[in-house]
Length: 75
Image 1 (cartoon, rainbow, N blue to C red):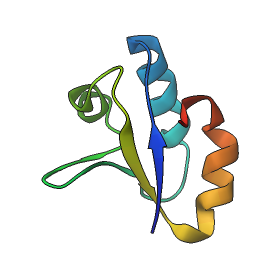
Image 2 (cartoon, rainbow, N blue to C red):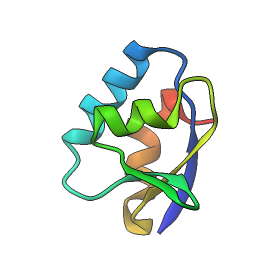
Image 3 (tube, one colour):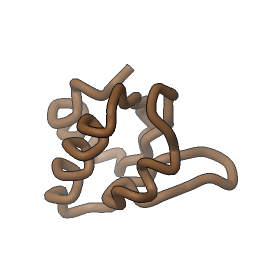
Image 4 (spheres, helix red, strand yellow):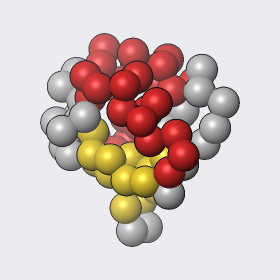
């Protein structure tokens, strides 16, 4: 599992992020500790917050693909 950090600047950014990750045929999760949500869930991603750095957990073998597809959200 690889961990990347993402941040969302607006509700539209969250909406676009969820649309992108929903098309990925593997699991992605956001969060740390007891706060882990499915990255494909709009409500879950909104729960994690806008304007905060959030860890994104992706399969290690898909890290480069995730980085290229989600570059605009990485910090």
